[in-house]
Image (cartoon, rainbow, N blue to C red; front, side, top):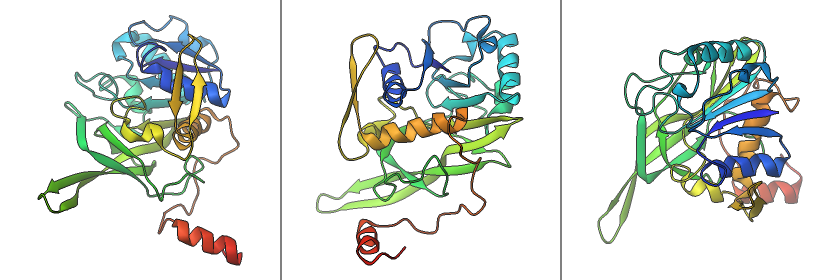
Length: 275
């Protein structure tokens, strides 16, 4: 069982990650952003905790310490970006025990970055979370929390923030900056992950439609979510890796990406049998 905290209600933003978990058959318990965490939240045997736009004020100081200890003992921890994640607007998790468990350093002030011109996700390391997904056709998000990876962690994805100028006859593209987007690590026996952007509108941008085809997933409250298959698979894999649902390593030893295969190269490999 996964404990998913945040993103308001299942009828709102939380419906997106809930749809991913439901489509994958993952059992979860959801706690809306406005609700305080149950007193015994760390005593319920959850495999992993997902904090997505859930305020640190929803926990007591003792609960934050116990949550960090639960991760050290083997539970997974995934924090997803948002206004009430990482530092956010008001320093939500800075200075709390949870900050020590995360695989990233938190900023000392407002870490939210809006990207109306888009931020392209780029794979820089091989990892079980990323394997087999169409990174040669990368998705675009439109906002994130600014993070810095800690030592002994792996930055798997970076975001390339675009700067686009329109001179009427020509569009000029430049890379404004490159920032960490997905960082994974360990805290004691538990796996940890930090995803810098939100997985629901508006920061998720075009990524919600990533992949060919369409998934329609009905929600427990009677609504439904439409999403791209690569978006759904990517988020499921983050959860599965963090919670230890799959027999995947922490990471590969030789994992640096030198080039991504193009569609034409894939077709040539299939025709010739070369790899």
